[in-house]
Amino acid sequence: MKEAVYVDSNVFILPVLGEKSERARGARTVLERVESGELLAYTSILTWDELVWVVSKVLGRTDGIQAGRKLLNFPGLRLIDVTAQVVSRAQTMLESYRLAPRDAVHCASALTRGLSTLVSDDRGLDVVAELRRSTLESFSSTPR
Image 1: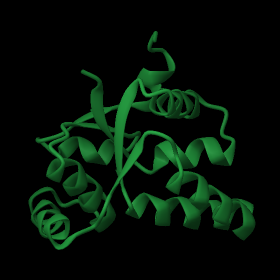
Image 2: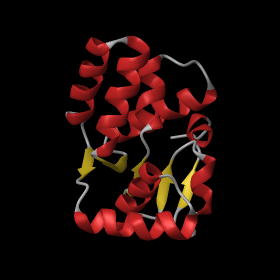
Image 3: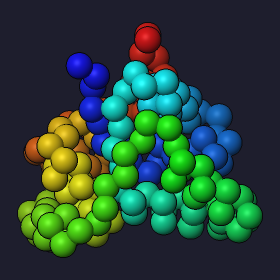
C-alpha cells in the first residue's frame, strides 16, 4: 500500500518561486513522487489560496493564476474541502496547540482524513502530537 501524506502549501510554493535549496529540492521530489503515483498526497483547498497569493505577490498575478490552475489539475493530488467539521477541529487545535489559524486548518484537514504524516518545513507544526512532520530535506536525500 502506498504511503499517504498531507502536503503543506510550502511544498508547492518553493518550486514555483525557483528556490535553489535542499528544501526546494525536497519539495520537487515530493511533487514528482505524487505525480508518478508513488506517493498518495492530500492537501487542503486552502493551499490553492496560499499558493496563488504568494506567487502573485512575488512573481506577478499571471504567474499566480497559472500556479493555481496547475495545483487544481495536479495529477494524483487529492484536495480536502474546508468544511465545518474541519474548521471545528481546527478551532480545537488552535486552542490546544496555539497554532496560527491556517496551520490549524492544515493540521485538522490531515487528521479528518486519518493522515498522520505531514510533509512541511514548518517547525511550528511539531507541537501537534497527532501528526509526524516529514521535512522537505528528508525527501531531497531519500532514495526512491
